[in-house]
Amino acid sequence: MRGAVLYGPRDVRFEEREDPKIIEPTDAVIRIAATCVCGSDLWPYRGLQSINGPTPMGHEYCGFVEEVGTAVKSVKPGQFVVGSFATSDNTCPHCQYGYQSSCVRREFVTRAQAPLLRVPLADGTLVPTPSVPSDDLVPSLLTTSDVLGTGWFAADAANVKPGSTVVVVGDGAVGLLGVLSARQMGAERIIGMSRHESRQKLAREYGATDIVTERGDDGVAHIKELTKGIGADSVLECVGTQESMLQAILSTRPGGFVSYVGVPHGVELNGGQLFFTHVHLHGGPAPVRRYLPALIALVLNGKINPGKVFDVVLPLDQVAEGYRAMDERRAIKALLRP
Ligand SMILES: [Zn+2]
Image (cartoon, rainbow, N blue to C red; front, side):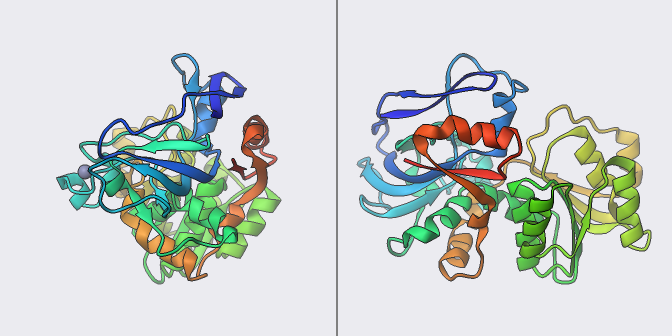
């Protein structure tokens, strides 16, 4: 088969890779129905995160079970499944507490931009849909694998409740789906921070009530102005830079909650400053597996349409163009079809 391999900054190639096969009896191999490029793929793509030689790429996936190992019980060939970017046994203490992305047996999926994918710990990682979904639902189902699961975790970890005032920092696909998630959880006011018109439009469609275009101190000042000087109850930090993290913390009211789901790059917090903000901090790699059954049901019942974040759809062999379009911010998120 052929799949995506990152060679260095802005050098993604679609080239021959070994077909995945069952290695452990707990593995499954799935035939990918759709995969995509993640915002976090752009860190190594831009050379801001180093790689050790040519690196197969991709961690968002859904598709059909092709083959399972002898120990796999909960999924079988032919089923349509979605799994998290982090594998989990779904039985260890961390999994039981709902932090499957910290599973003691966790592995990160890194080879999903390909027609076939090996998924370790298939029983604890993959969630089958009740029947084979219609093709038009595949993009939305794909989002549950990471980007929606991460936006949902962002809203959950920031304690979004009915009536909450919420700020979402970041207008990438995770931020936009953080808006959707906050709306689903009953937030009354959702302030999206975005400087891009097409993203503002989708944010409003997903439930944003206000848009703030300023960043840094001006952005914080605008949030304070919109919240009568108090700050927000819940702030979702969906970028991962020093500027976005500070903006999130300083936009939160004392006693409020900041979630952070953007992979941090160069973020350093000052203990003294943090002490006097009085905020709760809760973040990390989203435990997508915790939310998968509920999110899949919301998609299948037509309650949400997270697949709208895919504004570029490409055949998998044009994966390099998907990275370029996202790198240049011509696309919010690129869907890839084998
Ligand atoms: Zn576990």
